[in-house]
Image (cartoon, rainbow, N blue to C red; front, side):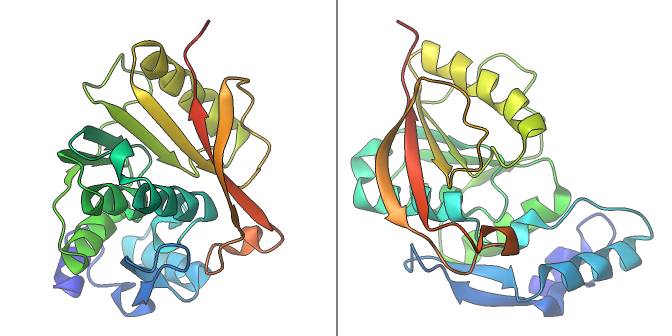
Length: 224
């Protein structure tokens, strides 16, 4: 099944499938994900098979912010239990899967990368949960009809943060609960984001996370 799903992703054949290993997530060992031992090698193989430049395989790593947010949902399931949840820039589906396991009524995992949506499918099956997967670019749209928006490590660059933060703000101001997992990359520029939990650094993340020793979960408050 793993190879067949990758064969359907952007016409890639099964390139890269043998680079993934089903691995428990350090901060949320309740979850297993198909992760790359060497994301750079995986990226090169996918590009070679596709014959074109591809975005980095962010979906093949357990990012520190996503791990923290998943841990928070397991520790505080009441945040999502019985609610409609959107996981923005879902990547591997880590946070979406945690929300489903914590009892969310519905979970939408959104990512514009077709390889990510394939990975989310694989990981949801591996963890025996159901999530709805979408590839729509939601950031320029108005509001999504949900109760909770989750963003695990979606602020990893200034350019992306400039798009994501207004989206999160719009939803917060309409009464939607917004939670962000962030290891302190310096792009949380909105003063309405307040920490609700802190965790020690998660291992198994991407290489650029190796110097991070703390990761936190932030909640966005409405405008006064």
